[in-house]
Length: 280
Image 1 (cartoon, helix red, strand yellow):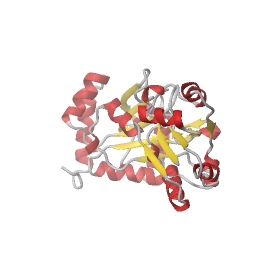
Image 2 (cartoon, rainbow, N blue to C red):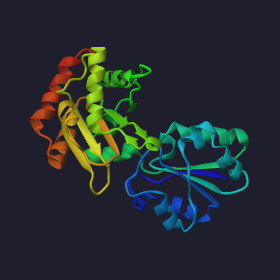
Image 3 (cartoon, rainbow, N blue to C red):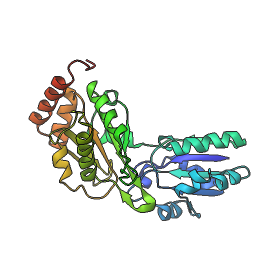
Image 4 (cartoon, helix red, strand yellow):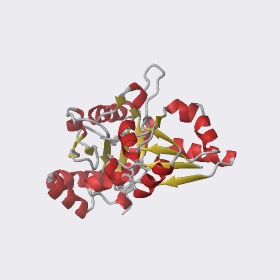
């Protein structure tokens, strides 16, 4: 049997009891951390917790090789694949489930806190005011690739007054983690390249660093300010807000010290800019 289980966002603090119970019964345990990143959570920590060997797998093991070794073992043994956050947030794990079904391997999916949960807890924003979630990936200038689809998704969400959660690229094998400063510069570059008229240095952004960790940082600032700041260690996410609800403004002001006038000014900008398309 194959169990794909989430570990949450921070450390062993977030591991569900049901997952811990299965880990103690498991004959084989795999751990992947290339689709997400959790502070204070790694292979050695998990091994110490469950008292057994944990095999760390890379992207090519699960994607390029279609998780062949893992699924072959799951035919005969209880195999647990651990992932940071919530298992099916990453499409990689959906593909493994489909392959297990095709091979007749029984499977179980156990959820845990996802990055979306972390962002809601960190910012106090309302989940029903979010539009499409996007990932901002590193461009490949040699091949002429730029993540224009991310920019246009942000633009579409803004046109309806909706917030955009922007997940930042993680390339664990290369030890490259996109930081908010680079992300802000890239979004402004995409604006210049498309002339879309949706973002500028004065656009509001909410930067979340290490969501739910003890050293969590939430900063409400402009894209221009974010482009010039450092926010410490990853993981990071951005939110480009749409129209902020009065209770969201109050939360960001009292909990994170965001200036009221800045947020109210942003709301007025969104109303003026997208008055013909806003969902009211």
